Image (cartoon, rainbow, N blue to C red; front, side, top):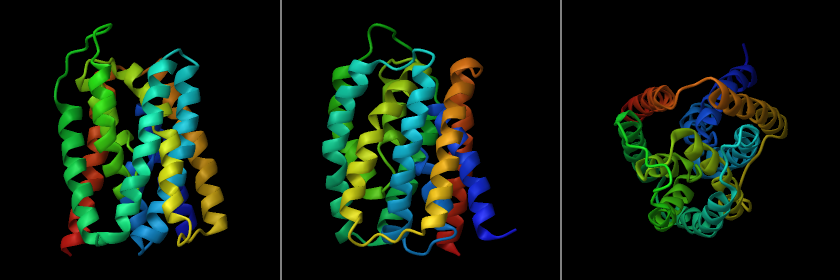
Length: 245
C-alpha cells in the first residue's frame, strides 16, 4: 500500500472523529501528517490549516442540519478567532519547530484531561462573555501551532456550561474562518502536492460531515468527549515517542 493510500485512509478516520466534535481535523492531522512530511512549518501546518477549514465547514453543515449551531454566538466567536489566529501564525516564523511541538504536546495533554473530566451543563446560563475573552489567547496559540483554535475552544465552551453537541456546533463554525486566516502567513513558503492535497480535502469534507451527522443523531455527549480524548492521547504518545527516538 503506497503512502497516498495510507494518508487517505488515516485522514478519513481522523476527519470522521474530529467532525464528531466539530473541531476541524488539524489537531489530529498535525502529528499524523508529521509522520510523512519532514517540514512542519512549510508542509504540515499549511496543509493542516487548509484541511481544518474545509472539515470545519462541512462539520458545520452536519450540525446545522440538526439545529445544533447557535449562529449568533458562532459568528461572534469566528470574528475573534479570525483576527487573532494570524498573530500566532506570524510568530511561528521566529520559534524553533521543536518548541512548537512541545507546546502542542502540552496543549494535547490539557485537552485530553478536560475531555475526560466531568463537567456541569448550564443551559441558558453559559458564560459566553468569558468564552469570547479566552478565544483570543486560544486562537493565537492555535495559529502558532498551525492547527486551528477548535482544539481548546471546544473544551472551553463545555467548561463554561454549553452542552456538548451545542458546543460542537458553535465550535465547528467558529474555527473555520481562522483556519484560512492563519494560512495566509504560510502561503509565500508553503509546499503543496496537488494530488495529495485534493484527495485529502475531498476525503476530509466527506468524513467531517459524516462525523457531525453521527454525533447529531446517535452519540451521547459524554461518550463523544471520551472517544476523542482517547484519539488525542494515542496520537500524543506516539509523537512523544518520535521526539525521544
